[in-house]
Image 1 (cartoon, rainbow, N blue to C red):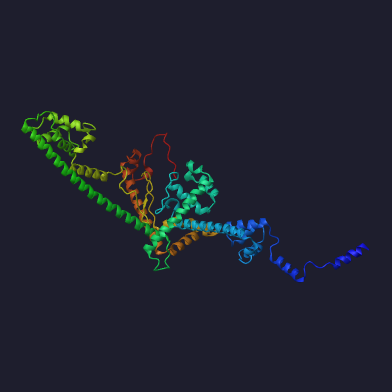
Image 2 (image 1 turned 135 degrees about the vertical axis):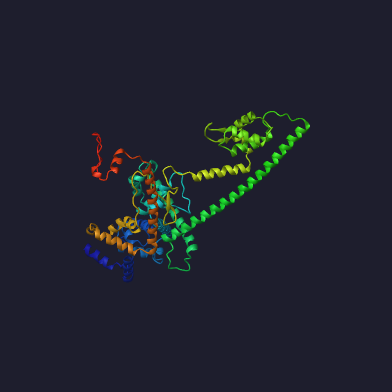
Length: 520
């Protein structure tokens, strides 16, 4: 009876939701994201700030949902009518600002990476040639070579891969004994790499600004602005401009020196006139007592010594007495010479005026001494070299030094432009071929020849410039080798062989202890 009464009561109770509200409830549940919890939402915000709002695949990996579900949630979140209405105003604004800050950081990283890539691509060998010309990157803790490698590694491994850069430092033979760089922490390496990448971005901005002024890109938009050719032309023009400025500054300073020397000469003449007048007045009044070396003739003696640095002391004394007879004896002059100047040795060497007497030198003597020093420095050459040039101008207009050469072995023959190109690009061309084709020399040579034919005239001119550089290198090394060969004494065995027409019949050394050299 009770069960029947309960069933009757349930049937008599009214429904909580009518048909319209039930349908509305089902629509709201279907349009919402009931499987998304608070941790999913927090992970979605963090991943959007880390990878960007449109990187659905990477966000899905962080959140733990499918890419389709994440894309649907993101579209609803960024919809003003849906996302802003479902969250409180403060929470929604805080999440949006977090994501925008992350996206701004991503854009900065992209700009840094792109600028680093462009700067590295402007050099043929950035590991040795990369430099900053318009931005100051000097640091008392890092050298230019260290900064150059850190920036190249940042481009190679990517931003924030500081652990890989630290391992590269440890494996690099260039920094085998650089204990400072090898002992840096990952955080310190990251800070320095980020500083260099920001400097690279500023460097590219300055280069683009100068290239726009030089190349006039606004008139011809099809011309690529940041190219290696434009950069080399820009650096060549900057180098030429700096050289002209240095020459102009040097000429200006030389003119100032000439004016100052003329003023010194006039003042010295006035002082000598005053000293002569004082000596004559004392002679006329009878207060002048002739004893020792006359003070008014001291400047003339100092200048005479400086103008004749290699003469003997008696020769200078005789010359002074010819100029000023009856003023003092030869012994007094010799004593005064030893007082105002010193000589390295009696038989050789030159006279050096002491510092306290240099003020007596006139402008003409100073000019003569400076000219002799300049002539001497220009006439000096290294003992084993035949030319002062230690390098030549490369394709980019900069000075490229020659490799060290001691002249003990014959120099390497100079190469043609095509040979230099093949030697440089052979590894790159072989990497593009299949493993079977790499072993076929004919196919490798054909690929190299095709790459050479595809080069533009400008790139071929660069290799021809390297050919001219290599010819100068060979000429220099050949001259050094020939000069050393003339100095090298010939052994008795060599003389016997040279006198014989048949080298095979030349007498051999009889010493049983001599060991013949192994032929290569």
